[in-house]
Image (cartoon, rainbow, N blue to C red; front, side, top):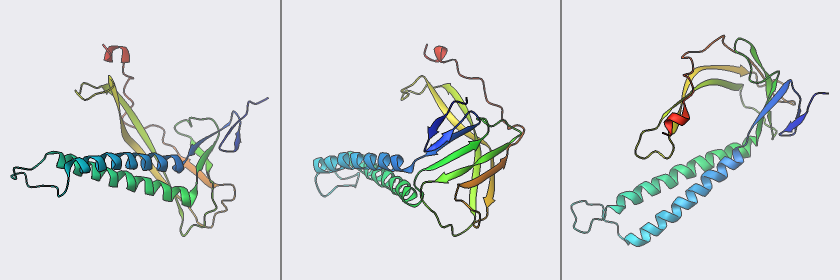
Length: 199
């Protein structure tokens, strides 16, 4: 008997896998960050008093005004990201990529499956599906500000785009049919020896 599990309400077997994108938690994460930084900015603003002196030649100039500007910029940035993810969640809800066949999908074959949205969507144009291959590099982190002995960097090495007509029946999800290349360059570098990185 095939072993079964459930991801996002989809019953999976050995020849089917799924992954979920949930914008809701991302929106909450950025919203909480914006509120926390806003609290810090409010406290710092109260300590600085009003009006803020931005003229560096003024004897009463306080360099913390620069920090305050950075905090306010962070509040706006995190708030914008939170709003973007919230709008995506409101429009589509969670999205599940259900892959037919083994995962990871071997290179040189076809990625087949569907994207299942939690909410009903009336598309105003064709669906645009973008698949990007990311090459992950690990290297020793020798920066003074490093909090870990190693760091990861992501490099897009291959990408393709397909369209699905808006008239397609998506009652079971937006169909995904993407041919994968036989290989991608540059080839992944050998994994970092973390025991040496920590020495």
